[in-house]
Amino acid sequence: MRSALSRCLQTAGRVGLILVVVFNAVAEDTTTGSGNAVCPDAELLGPKLITDICWSCLFPLRIAGAPIGSGPVPSGASTQALCACPDPAGLPSPGVVIGMWEPARIVELVRVPGCLPALGGARLDLGSWRTLGTPGQANYDGSDKAFYNYHYYAFPLLMMLDLFFPDRCNVDHLTDFDLLYLSELDPTWNNDELAFFTNPEAAFVANPVAQAACLVDAASATTVQKPLDELFWCAGAWGGLYPFSGRVPTLNGRPSEMSLASARVLAALHRRGLARQTVGDDALCEAPFALMLPKTQYRLSQFYPRPEANSNHVIGESELRWGLGRNVPGIGEDHLYLIWRWHDCCLTWL
Image (cartoon, rainbow, N blue to C red; front, side):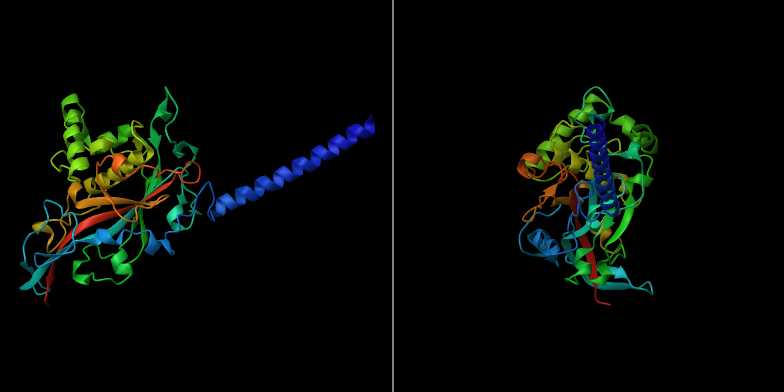
């Protein structure tokens, strides 16, 4: 009897030791973040940088009003052929107007605080369990809304690859892939009340009439791919832009939730003066601040987990047209979106 009990205790001890070793190995791998289910590697800086980018979405390229290639153009884009901008001495320098879609930013939406799929699945010691993301599948509590942390990257792909993008038109003066903003350091991203106090205009659009107007924005974005800038509080078929926080309703599918969160990121950064207007005659010489989100300036394409390698979509466009099958349960629930923006620029001769 004692020998049997002794053997059982020895076996249990070995099993416990094995479990401890396995747990420590998993914890170590999760901490280093070398690409796993907890913090996946989106493989951004690799062959996918070429194969999973919608290169046809660069077009049309407008030079002096003449289009090269076909594609959508924002309604507010400049139609001028010639222009003039001040040179360093303050004298007007003549030039020609160019306009194009440029891949400019990346928005990364993750469940685990500090997880960086765009950087190979690396982990930063940020946040806590209180900022852990949720897909919003529970009922009757706060987790009935989806919540994801976000990271905002500079991604001047044309500058990085040295592709037909003049230095004169680099209004951000950014030339490299760089991490610009982390939501784990922003207390308004996971608190709707704080987000409201930083953007009090949300009170004026929190009524049934204003929200019903978003149906018009949804129809315009989905049918003709032209969101309405006048309805600044709407994100079309995805829902309302306000509040500028990470808690989004789960009425639509996961791609719509992630796209709505990306649109809120852009809207919040514009509201804080951290993003600029690059479309229209006013942006030819320098990019002015735009405190309200110019929705027609942007287009989005999913890069991870399922790339939109042949198209992109406007803010508010129904996911029935672009998002089916773009969520992979488990390892593919963190999303990366490539942000395209239309850029009008006066390319001066001097």
